[in-house]
Image: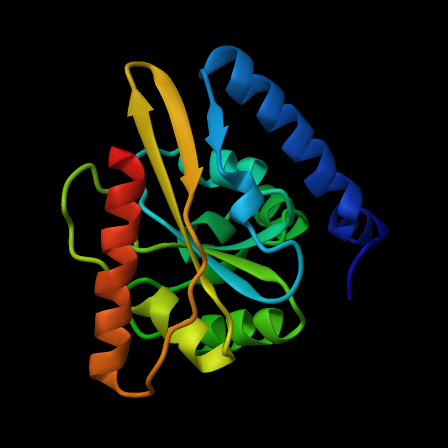
Length: 195
């Protein structure tokens, strides 16, 4: 049973306040520049799929997206009670990266069916290089019948950049189709950083 404090943290105010604060800090201290945010679908389920280079990526990507994003976050972050409360208040949910986490998959699919945006870092963890992309984002979008939205995060000197690409809907139902969609997604993300 949730306490009054837990219920207060679950309200929309925490996400909105965090977004305002992160945008202000990101623009003033981190040189954040957001490009093509108009490409983000304003309603309906969507999987926002991005590369992941620093610990700043989740808050910066979330704040840069002009709608609430529910991020999958590694389960270890939910072990501390205060951090678990904060993450849940920011609509994040845990995923076990060591195995195929059916609970996280079901939670993501339910959220997509309700019209939420799900945020996923395609390589599963921080990677400055060309770590192999995982198929989770493509699988969720294909299963839920929602678009994939490529997003790229990179640095120009000390300044952060976030750019959104054109959303596209995965086609096909096989493992090969999902793998092809992941490859297409990664090409899109890389192209966003170069353009």
